[in-house]
Length: 84
Image (cartoon, rainbow, N blue to C red; front, side):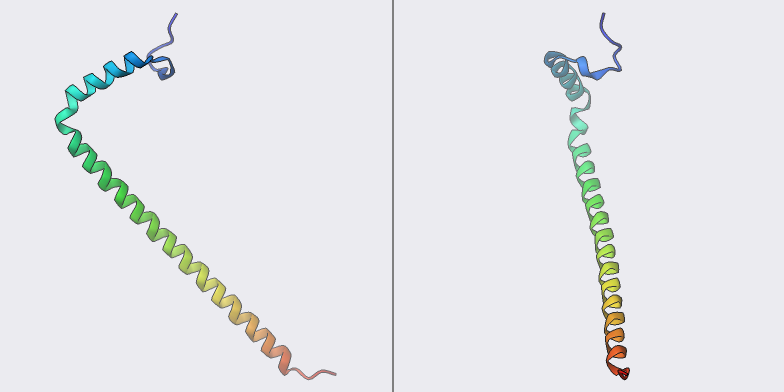
């Protein structure tokens, strides 16, 4: 007994080929448009990720700068205090 159609793992290669051919016949004229849309979407997604990564890097640099300034202030304060 075969599992229900929702279980995709049991398609054989000929069945997949038939499905692809039917999909190509039905949507063949719109495939270039769909491909362009997918490409644009992926490009926008990558730009968004790059922008977020730049923001995180900027925040990291700012935190490092603040830590370095705090450490320099501490070292300066220690050097100025008289030793007893």
